[in-house]
Image 1 (cartoon, rainbow, N blue to C red):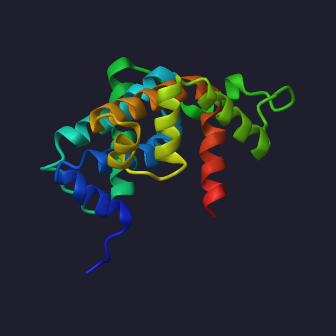
Image 2 (image 1 turned 45 degrees about the vertical axis):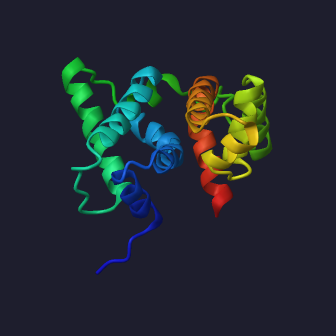
Length: 192
């Protein structure tokens, strides 16, 4: 029998109504799934909606979802299928390759960033968050504190922590939307 990886374990926790595990899975895969969805859909808002729809469906159907491969494969397949359904429904025929060919000029592009520049861009975006939200976000993402630990340290409820993290992710995804593919690669290479 194949050994479960950490994502499969997270999904087992999600099946048992663990909201922290769900938030962890969301934060681990959200950027990559957005980049993946951009292969099929060109509008950022539609990409963001697509990924959020898939996660909402996962939470709603968490007790009955059967995953025959891995959680990672399930997520990417779900995004692909949802994107294809959106394309069919809205008759969007612009593929990612066409979008790049029509909009990207490598000779005039200013969208190449060093790791240091990307880290500065991310830090500037985090600094623009409201103070309480910023503190909670930093505790969660940089100090690896659990929601319960944050709630105790900040003297707030776990639900408030969840709300702050959700707001931070939305605000950051909006302010960093133009850098999302680069930031995804930054996090990938920093883990190696």
